[in-house]
Structure formats: structure tokens, C-alpha cells
Length: 393
Ligand code: IPM
Ligand code: MG
Image 1: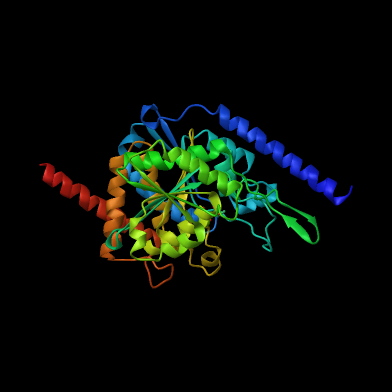
Image 2: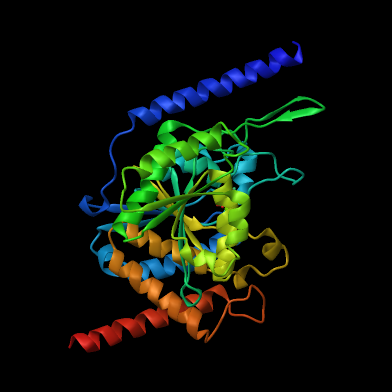
């Protein structure tokens, strides 16, 4: 077969898969209403690398916060094993089938980082488990807050999570030895729902500005469509100012101390969201401090924004990994499933620990271990509970 025919066949398969996906999106119904569920099953997946260690500490805090409802049986913490790079590599699958079945039997998931094989690594080229899970469970909104109150930073990013450069990130191909092609995808439904999520969040939280970030001046078709749809959705929210930026100048403006305070809610395609949220998290103390919510209509998954820290594992520093990102993920999870008070309590305790710095995690032996840090957060939570009990008396 000549190479153009071979490439056409691959492209055709890709188009078919995407068109089928669009039909599924159009047929989508039903949103999980967590507070009305009789039972909520929280799946806990450790992942690999530093994942299991930091997830265990986050789970510990979660179990304390939900003690009562776990005892009454309303909430179930279910540990799910097997989302490891070894097993994924052996099976050649981003998510082993049995793990996926178990995940789908939960209502919400707390997930530790998983190793993403990269070009040149010893692992086979399986798709990232994060990316696969976002697609499989249709977790279209990647919501990432970044706050640095003393610098006036209070941002929340709505990163589109299932399309853009990631939609077919594993389906690009080499046409011949001199030409490689990748694809990026924007759909009407996919963009409408992320834009609406950003505006709804703004409306519900008294935010006055939503900022779209694209590169529509160059990536004219897909980013152009994304931006056009954001503009259209913006018209439904007359009380909210909508503005448009390109990703290059936005990365610069985030370091502009005067300008950056003005931004509130961001909406952006997948890849730009990936990049900009790492930059944003750096102001808050690094990716180790940032949690990430992956929200769909039916499921939701909460995780750290960073990877599995292979360097830390190799250097024997796993137990010094910062569990803050996973604890922030727990706070977001609690808010999402209707335990906002418990979520706030954790957030306040973590903010207090970050301010007071009685102990701090550095990732190395000059800092606290993950376990010590979790104990510190638990102690702070306890102190808050007893002071609120006192003032209630
Ligand atoms: C993130 C991560 C993932 C991504 C990686 C691990 C595949 O960087 O959640 O931001 O690129 O989305
Ligand atoms: Mg990232």
C-alpha cells in the first residue's frame, strides 16, 4: 500500500471514532446529584511512583473527616489496586479492564499520580492513565484553583479535559520517515460544556470575569472554534465580563504582578490548560501544593496536578513527598459530593499549616515526611474543631 493510502486509512479511522464520540456527547443525559444518593462510594487508587505514599496520607485525612458517615455506611471508601505502570505495561493498556470496571462502580474517585511512559523510556508506549481515565469517564472539566491571598492571586482554571491536542494524542502517525503528523480536536458540544461550566462557576461564586486563553490567531480552525463558542456562551451571562488572550502573552501576564490580580476564572483548551496550570501553581508553592478536579456529568475524579515523581523514587525520597496536592484534591472532592463543611475545614487547616510552617515538606530529608505532615494537618483540624466547639458553647 502506498503511504498516502495508508495514512488516509488511519485518518479515516480517527474521524470515525471522533464522529461517534460527538454522537455520544449529543446523547448525554443525567448529572449525578451526590447529596441525593443513598450511598456514596469513593474509590481510592494509589497509582505508582510516589502515588501510593501520598494517597495513603490523603486517605487518612479523608477517613477522619468523614468518620461519622463512614461508620453509618453512607460513605464507603473502596481501595482499588492495580493501576500500576507494571501491570499497565504488561497488559499494554492505559487502564486494565478490571480496574476500569471497578472505577465505574464508584461514584467518585481519589487518584494518586500514575507514571506516563514517554518516548525513550523503558516502558511500552501505553497511553497515560490520567488521560485515558478522563476520556473513559468523560471527565470533561479539569478544574484547578490557585490561590496566593497575600499576593492577591485567586484564580480558577477550567481546562477542557477530553479534547484538543489530547483527544487523539496517541493516534498521530509517521507518514514516512520524514513526516510525522498529530491532530487536535474541537467539538461544539465539548466546548459548550466547558465554557458553560466556567461561566456557571463564575456566576455561582460572585466572580465578575471569565478569560478565554487560546492561540486562535494561528491555530485558526480548532482554537478559532473554541473561542467563537466561548464568545457565544458569554452572551448568556451579561453580568460577567468576558475577555480573550493568547496563550503566549498569558504566560507572560501571569508573572506581571499588577495584571495577574485581575484574572479570576480561566477557560482554555486542554494543552494550554496543562501548561498554564503548572505555571500558575508555581506561585502557590509549586505543583506539589495543587489539587485538581476532573468533573464529568456522571463521574468525578480528584488528583494531584503533578506526576509520579520517578526521580524521588529513584533517589529513595518517596516518604518525603509532599501529600499537600492530594489533600487539596480531598478538599475538592468533599465539596463536590456535598460535604463542603468538611472540605472547608481541611482547606483552613492546610492554609494554616502553610502559613505557620511549624514543619514543612521539602521533598528531602531536611524536611518533614509525608506522614508527619499529615499528622500536622490532622492536629490543626482538631484544634479548629475544639475551638469551634468552645465558641459554640
Ligand atoms: C496533568 C498532567 C497530565 C497531563 C500528564 C501526567 C499526562 O501533566 O494532569 O496536568 O498532561 O494532563
Ligand atoms: Mg500537567
